Length: 470
Image (tube, rainbow, N blue to C red; front, side, top):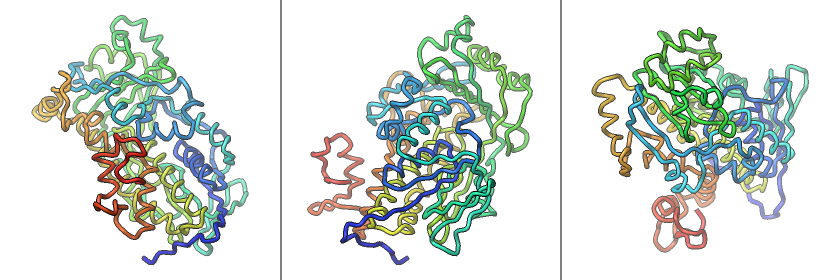
């Protein structure tokens, strides 16, 4: 397709008004990043208050770097919890895999945080307001006009009208923006897998002599079983024990369901007595679907004035803790290419095409890895489980592996998923766009920037990097 890239000989800056439909974690983070790039930002949220439902969430190193860069970590403070190790177990508690968290953090030079969704969202909202973002509650979007003009006109249920240069659909699984662009697309559960979410106070666990042996230090624990698993970790400054309890039902689950707590407890009655005792402490829970969206052929409107991000574009299963993280990466990438729009170096439709071209395959890859990790944790009893456990067993002796079914510690997966830098990716993609070549190369040797980064530049100080700008 012919480029509509524009020059900037005069140095004149453009002004653009970006609207976001949805003020969840991804939407508010994108608002911060885009406001920092220089755009005017308005976020329309349907709910009458700002907040997040749910329980714990992992801020893995790929997005911890973004929280640090934008100062969100300082606002959240001690509610960002670091843990010492990951232990993978059979459902009876037998250890089969191990990851020392400090090895991951040291290799990537970023922390791996655990946090309550509410604390994360609260921190993001605070920083968004500090950057001048207009967060409007009670603004349910009911109509979007985008076909007849380069501008987008949005009408809310309350009768208000907003006009934007770009509308971003950050409104999640049930996205009104996605339904407007692609009415035939419907997120679906790929299998009968679904999950409970639960929190139990550490103080309550300490009073149980059996369960309390699990909380002597801050760890992440995974109990793996055929068609079920439990993952647990600390949140809320180490005062709450968060659990995600994965299981299967006779039929696919598409909506949140109320449950019998007796059924939940029976589901895990044969697990390690330590975690089973904590499961018995859960006061109430609901069954949550694991819905996957796409992959879609496009994330945007023909004019590039409406675009999707996050769960609206690529919801995924939760087994790699990358749903919110991938949404935040979308926002970070968008902010870099929109910076170039604001500087009048690239047209808005080209910036959106570049975002789609680069981010769509990344998101699809995450969807696949996430699904497969869930399959690894829920292998059928017998030879499949034994083969998985044999492949991980050297980790228990501290032996480094070149590859492992423990994807939270597998070197290739860690580098690909947790070592990913969305902003650096966007800068490389812009270089390719501007230079009309595959990647920026060292003139003398022909070495491509991504190769230099993967092999050499990751450990060198900035001024010593083989390719000066990657």
